[in-house]
Image 1 (cartoon, rainbow, N blue to C red):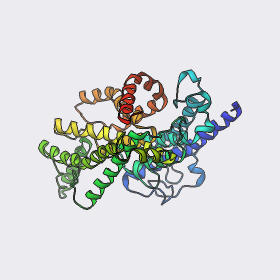
Image 2 (image 1 turned 45 degrees about the vertical axis):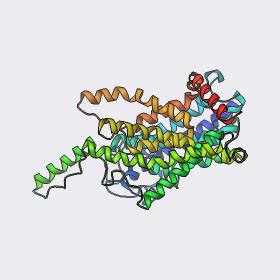
Image 3 (image 1 turned 90 degrees about the vertical axis):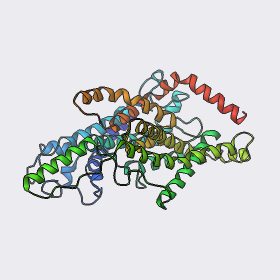
Image 4 (image 1 turned 180 degrees about the horizontal axis):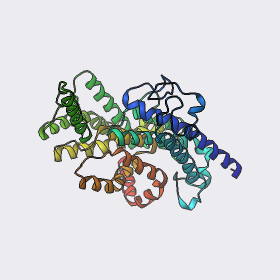
Length: 418
């Protein structure tokens, strides 16, 4: 590709990214408040006056209004143009790092050759990566403010990251294509069995045959306790009725709730193991399974599913183990959802590396909170930051881990007999 074409794409990505950032502002405000992302249209949150189209121009609209509503003169948060500019900048930066850096830097896709990593051959997967970046930015800002990650960001049929990832990988993945997650027989068996078991667990949960953990709401976070204390003080000052006391969990009760989650995971783990036995070398379904995986879209779909399952399980296992050991909720289910989405886009290996890299980013802030008397921090931003780094540098990281992957490959070849 010529330099003028690269520059044209960079300009387009900046404009496109700023528009995506404008939509993310809507997501960040409305999604955790269960408001529609479409209706009503953009309006001032203070006077509710609908905004004109020229007031909604990303970045420039806020500057033209000098950070105030045209109608009621209320200050408009600087977060809006910052999110728009940050999204635009990330889109441009990642394009430059993926496609304009020397091949020796090994940034972006682990391509077999520089030509294989051209934008023309990898643009669907690259756009999926940008989609993940935008979702991570929205999830991080929501989590940083409210200590929640709305599951719709990952699982919504109207554009959740995991759903989009599975569709894209099913449609575009092919052998030797950079970013492809096409699964070999053993990982594909684990993915298909785990997914079938997960669907069974969800069905049993819906039918009431499996218990739902924390059905009365999870243990209160520090931010929720502080909010309740403010409500009590406000009610006392007004002479009003005190708000009801929130549900408190003992360590024993928390461990009992976590046991319910362990029960939920039994079918996925069992089904994955059984299908692996049925399809491995010498198994009754071995030949049929290998023939099925020659269908490209099935291999790509199962590779993405495996990434989602492994990414979610790594966090969920940590949540279960930490909660059982310490008698308090170790990690939120929103973190499970988030890394499942990361795995569905980037694959099982990249999601696992991101999980173990995230504590390095959160450690400094965690120490600061500890000395301030707080023990809770939103983990989503650090998982997101680690993912953003892994998205760029997974290739050299995988190179350092090559001895381990070699052992895994040898075990797989022994199991499958080739």
